[in-house]
Amino acid sequence: MAWQENGAEFYEMIPHIPSALERQIGVWVLTSGRNRAKSTYRVGPRHFTYYSLHIILSGELHLSFRGDKVVLKRGDLFCMHPDETYEYEINPSGTELQMAWIAFHGPLAAAQLQLTQLSAVHPYIHNGVTRELIAILDTIRELIAQQLDQPLLLAGRLMEFLHLLVVTSSSNDSSSSHSLPTWLERGKSYMDVHFAEGITVEQVSDWLGISRSHFSKAFSKHMNTNPSNYLQRLRMREARRQLLESTYSITEIALSLGYGDLFAFTRAFTLFYGTAPKHYRDKHCDLEKYDQVML
Image 1: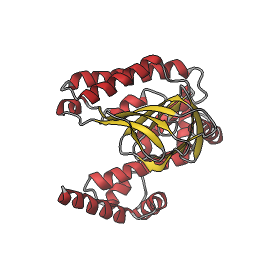
Image 2: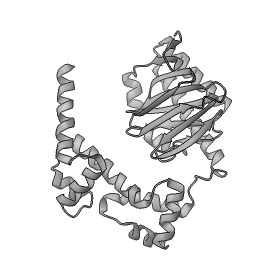
Image 3: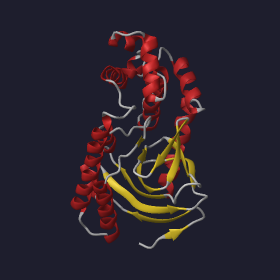
Image 4: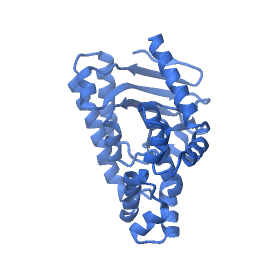
């Protein structure tokens, strides 16, 4: 596919429509591409409905997410997660920024990424790019461009790519300042599993056998957010999912997520999303009905 140009970059983007077989496998490619950024290159703020993983081939990029900002260079990679807001831009004083990327999705995508260091709170890996990783990505891009009816081959290459990410993450884990100590990982896992039971930070720290202040300080250092906010985010994401994907009443959703009453849930949801849960559900359901009519 020929390279294209806009005001900020030269780029090649090759879309892919996953087959029924790829969807049954549980993770599939959506698009892959490359770019050469101009001095004005800047993206965002924007969010994605899929996973978008970028490899930096040359140059330097500033990535902003969740109030944090990190400088990424050649050999680094980053992965943008669904429903998260990102901004990134070139360092115009550096060498030409070139990247290769792949977008993918599916019910197993999150589970695959959980095996790596790439998470919504830490979406990048320094020095994580290898020649083998680039080669597999090039192969995926070529397979998409050729439009061959070989879904198993393409799915196999994607799984190989994700597996190599796991291997790369493991090799970098011991030297990474962002890898979680075992006890802290246990605390995070406890919250991931039991957040809907109305647990508090004190209960988590008691379960770990340490003080709340020590737990909160260590958690904030490694996760770029405090444990109270982390628990709140888990509850709000699940609340959003249930509002949009279920017919449960708002009171039932509130109680199922550990809130004592509807008022406490409504207040928390409104502070997090900027609108009341009923209005949020009605608005998005109306948009879905509109989309169905247009289709």
